[in-house]
Structures are given as C-alpha cells and as structure tokens.
Length: 302
Image (cartoon, rainbow, N blue to C red; front, top):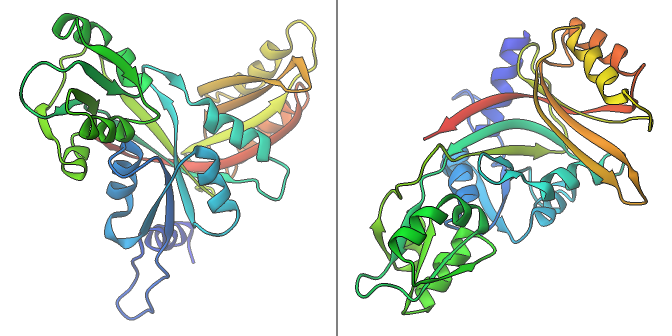
C-alpha cells in the first residue's frame, strides 16, 4: 500500500468509514475534556460526527487516563488559546507521562474560532455573570461597559457556567451558543463584540499514530544543561536545517526547579530525512530528545 493510500485508510478508520465491501471499522471511542456544551465537545462533534462514541471527562488528566487505559481510542484536549495562552494541564500530562506505560502521542491538531455568546433568560439585568476565566478575560472590557453592576464569577468551564446560570434565576453566562439548548437558556447576544480573534487549538491524542510522510508538524521534548547559551544552541541546530518553530513551552522540573524541560512544536515529520538530520544535530546540544508525535494540522472550524 502506498503512503497516500495508507494515510487515507487511517483517516477512514478514524472517521469510522471504509469501502462498501469491507466490514465496518469499530466505532472509535473519543474522550473529550469538559461537559456537553463546551467548546471541546463542539470540536469532538464536528471532527467525528455520529461515527464515534463521545464521552465527557471532568479533567484533562481523566482524558489521558481514558486513552492510556484503553477506555477511549482518542482524546481531545485543548493545547493553546490565543487569549489565555498555553493550556498547562495538557502540557504537563504530555511531559509527565513520557517514558511511562501511560505515555500518549499527538495524532492530529485542530483549531476552533471561538464565538462567545451571552446566554440566559430575558428580563432584568443580571446580578451575576458566569464563565470560564479565558472568556472572562477576553470579554472583560465588554462586560464592564455593558454590565458594570453585575458580579463576575469564574466557573470550571463554559458549560458549567451555563448550567449554573440555568439554576440561578438572576444570572447569565458567557459560553458556547450550543449550550443554550442543552441547559434550557436563550441566546441573548449571539456574538459578543470583543476585539481580536479568539482561536483555541486542540490535540487529538492516542496510544500510537502513524506520522505523515511529509509536512505536518512534530512535537519534541528535550532538556538542556544548565549553562549560558544552551537554549540558543539547541534551537540553532533546528534553524540550520530550516525547521520552523510554531510553539515552545518551558516547564520547570518538579524536583529541580532550576532545570527545565522544553516542549517544542515545529514544522516537519520524523519521516523526512532532512528532519531526522536536524534531530541528530539537536541531540548534540540537548538532553533526552524525543518525539511526542508527528501529526497533520487538520480543520480550522469557524
């Protein structure tokens, strides 16, 4: 089978489709972070549709546990928000599990253009407005201008915010408009007038994945010696091979806070000879270099 045909077969398996003459592939089980009505739920629904069994998980750690333990085929977790920055719970799960029996790899990256809506019951101005801290940060100026007397309260997720507003007759919520029908509220303002794009990126994680033959992106993890110029030398090794970086996150080691691990996302696949040459150069300047998956960057959902 050619690389293109193999890739198409893998995509069919992920989507639960195949040739008419073949036995249908098992339905994938997809764990996603949050409750029904969250943006993670929206991405899971739009990526897999009715071809997969979607199950919510309360925490990002529980999503990873479900996939590592075999209860789910894939997990969908947020990795970065344009307003709030990196999602460190996801970063930490990827790092802490590497080298263990519960390690996962990135299979695919998706992104969602987040549209925030004001949900509630029409009537008097609310005394309380709930949302997750990232939408509250994004909508702060709008809230202060339009509802200066409302108490702004943080929830664990946008779906929890909507649920709390549904239980509180004097509260509204900022969240996904799709949550209105789930929790029995109305869409009061379909699109809040906030500045800038609000893009959230998500990883699909799994126990194993086939890297794309070329293109795509790769997530690398490595450490550095504690000396001047170590990071510059490591990144220059990639730059000399024209490897473009798309994300870099550092995390201190729990038992040695002066030492850091670096999670670096870059363009290219471990299947490409030039990329493997770049990794060989990187290994001369960094410690414990390993790939957490080469993957394709897929849909951007509006």
